[in-house]
Length: 395
Image 1 (cartoon, rainbow, N blue to C red):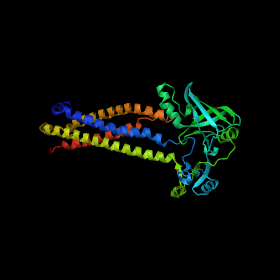
Image 2 (image 1 turned 180 degrees about the horizontal axis):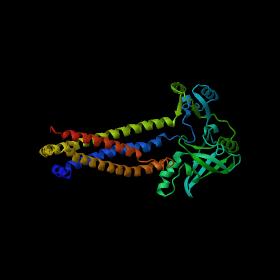
Image 3 (image 1 turned 45 degrees about the vertical axis):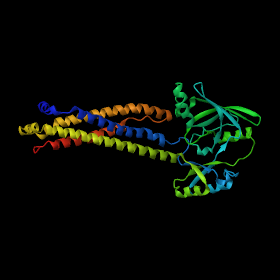
Image 4 (image 1 turned 180 degrees about the vertical axis):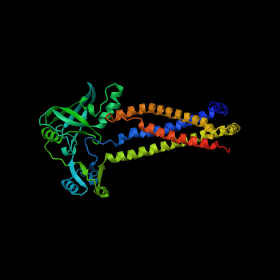
């Protein structure tokens, strides 16, 4: 084997093989990074809200509908709500109730002030909130009220103050670290309430409190007036189809469906990853041709030596083995270096992912490793077969 290698290695062109190595490394890294990135980023778009079911949608009237831009009301009348409830594609309907009193919030983490501003509270029927009833309960007159914060609040904190001031990042499991104090004023009275944060919601843009607290606080700190809802929360039946969409359009209702936005974002992510994978595969295929061209040139340059080796009793397999081992080694180097580069890139972008969603489960590099092994086996086998066929007794 060593004698055969000494005879055949004289015409090896290092620049050609270096060109193959770097081109294949570039293509392989793009492919593996695309696969790994898709696997790591997908949960950000597909993760469901832990407090609201995916079949819940928020319905409001379109701007300008119902005369809202011409002096009319954009709220839902009792007749409109009853009509919506009667539709076969609707499971149940609930209304939003907001605060009619002034609320100022002071939020802090580990003694550091994060928010100090006037805010707006919202409540929905308790049966629309997927949380233990013992946690989602308010006793009249109590100075503690459970709240669910919009996830945007905590994202701003994690990306901003937590990074710049070396403060701990907040996830769902660390919600208790948040100190939230609500100062309520109205009707000549005031009260301080501690907000007990039990989690975060991606579906809500306001702070959510139990309906019992909102009803009590409005009666104590605001005029006792019953306002018509301007937004509804609706549970759609599993069989809801185009009939529901047609009805909403005819009525001029807008649906705030973050699941639809997530599906669009996921589709866009798949498109981007597909383009990246195609580019990477094209580069890898071109590098494969560079390698095969280099091998064929070597075979032609060593044609006389190869013929002599075959004539003195060496088999085609023995003669081809040095070239096969050479390509095997090059492909192995490319695979290892690609995985190292993907690991380095992943270290940087996963910091952003964990900041955006600290509760996301930690993933592994298994997708990139599996994809890399598949490509490595395919390329190596194809190379070996091509080299074996190029060295035959009839050459």
